Image 1: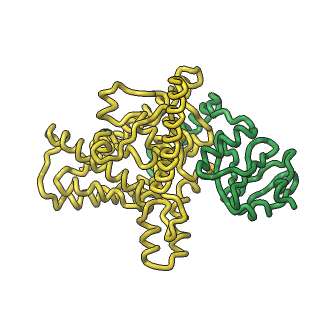
Image 2: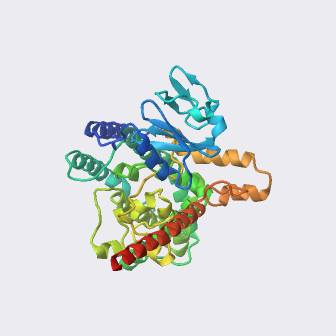
Image 3: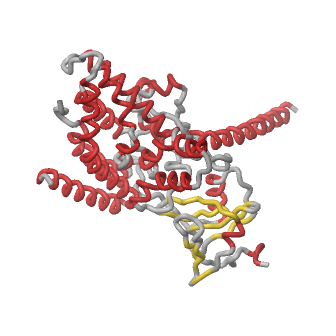
Length: 128
Length: 316
């Protein structure tokens, strides 16, 4: 490889590292406080505007939720300073059991892990 | 025949300084900008990767342009001012159609989607560039310029100028430019709309430098302060993995093609709009916008009814 090119690549990689470091130091991420019911409903209205929400299960750390909309589960979880939204059949989602205080949802890309809180899992209305 | 200079290479120090300034101004409350370090790292690494891939594919693409130019219709002098003026408009129009194609047809979207996968809109997003553009073949769209007679070096320089221009519009720090500027040029406001995932803003503002193409071809949507832009793609990615960012749509195409049952399905998955499916069960920009319009239509009579009731109340 050409020496000048190699130096340019190394310089670029160092610049990338410094810029990322600067952005971390600056703390400019969007505020994402733990979700409460109001916050969850607002987020659901934004991500799933055509769905009627029947019930909401909140993760214990407020970093995710599973909402029921008829036979569909609407899943949201925090990624960085935002949220990822996915939907899946309700029956598939509630079939996942809790393990070491977390619910893992392997059927969804990214396989989110939601922390168990005071709400029971599976959500009460389907527990029977 | 090689370009005398590369505007992008020359602009790299400016890019770095501008990003540092944007971060510092935001840090001290003088400008609006949000940064998530992992998101910024992905954007910058994609920019670096794009440069490395360009070393491999750039030569072949330039050679193809040269071959086409050798079979040109006219001979256009690189030193003529009029030639640069004509090329400015011709290249910008080419960019508009390249960009529109890259959003409206899945094969080309697979290459371009990486530029939109950030949920942030800051100057690092501008550097979030594709690694697979050479494979997608969108560079073919610029060949007619060489066939007309514009020297490939001239076209390459103008393409570089366009990309450098587009760097500064990837920011929330600039709210609006003067009205005359907003009317003619692509601006941070127009391009925020382009990067938004709100249904109302999808598939709009494809311009490179001149926004007039969008106004002319009916794809212009102004930024509405009442509905702030939410950035990213309709189905945001589940992680910050660099390779997921680069290849996820290509992988999606591969999976869909593997399950295809007819030539029609193959064609639809490859060249239909992103989100196309044989049974229409997936969401395309068209269906998302139609549903948004339906929701808006439901809101309007309700508000008018409420307004009417209030007016009657006042009158009574």
